[in-house]
Length: 368
Image (cartoon, rainbow, N blue to C red; front, side):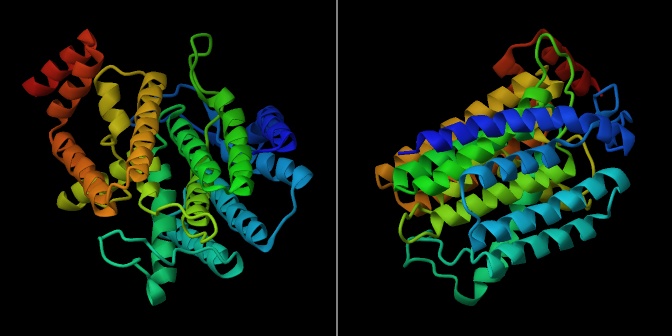
């Protein structure tokens, strides 16, 4: 079981991260680490600090240093994370071109592979045949998966609390899977990361007495969280001592992965860059259907937790891996069909919410 010391470290990480956000706030204004409202996709009305990722990273490292030792794998993870956080802060301030961000993400992936010794070497009986050993494809697949997860989290970070709550749900499910597999050490580290992220969410989630977020993750934060989820998933599914089936990883972060894949397919069909800005993410459609940012984030986080629970139970019942993979592909296909017609997608979420405003918006879209 997880020790009292580790549970205390989780609480300490929560407190330290919250305090760091308060302490870093003046520096964010001084160095213009702010997201300025510019209309269009942005719905905040005041310059907002983008220091959430820096605070989460520092909060975790400080708490981890106090209770645990730095192995080679952890040092590599922290070095790769630091690279992404620094680049993300620079990107938040100067708006880097997408290919420079991808290059840095590839370098971070190679750090955890060659220094940290963490990579995807087998996919399990994903297609019903053998163990799916990757061999020489291990490194390129690991890089592809890591960069993909980083950008999936980045793309979903478009509403207050959304990326944070979805990542928190994923981390809690990964911790539960680690405990179930007997990997208590990894579970403790994941819970510390969850504690740091929770400390950020205190500043990021809209509440009845606080109508706007006081801090954003920024590109530094979304990149860090994407790396965190990739690193934990690889550690969990590629550990022969505590094996967890790799296909489970798809079901622990279903919304960002599904939304990212479908968005790429749809934009390529429209001959647009997958990295172009736009209001075609799931949270934008939910906003048109009358969902506020907090309600959207909570609904999608609950859906993610439900997906993870069902997938976990299916694995306990020894449902074949190809069936679980086919189910995830079917989920993506269903979202592609639904979101290909915005009026239809808005109507679906309006039905879920039964909002008069959403029905009115649907009528206006139909008239156009």
